[in-house]
Length: 126
Image 1 (cartoon, rainbow, N blue to C red):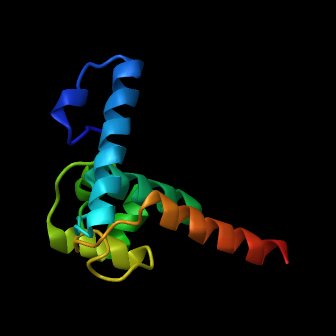
Image 2 (cartoon, one colour):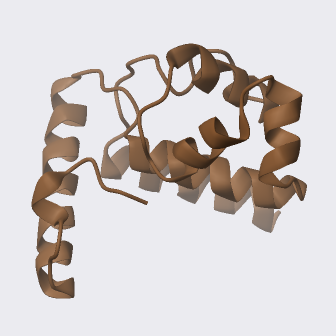
């Protein structure tokens, strides 16, 4: 998957970790400020790949279900730019609302994610 951050090309593992930490810090700051963000190409790619695997679908099957080309599904999973309409079709096939990959939203901060996970964990333990 190609990164949308050009500074990540040809980096050592330690450099990569440092850049990701910086990006995480920036995202946390935006969450605290309430700045809406569109999901990153990398996060969309990861989500599509994981969900397709969960459902046991080949790329060809996802393409056929959504009416997009196989090359579009491949580009999405590589984290490349594709048309919003294609992303919406893929989102719906993966049981997400249209706009799930294209609509800006305020990201959760670390504290909110930990709170949600803690609550979910307590519910599962009962």
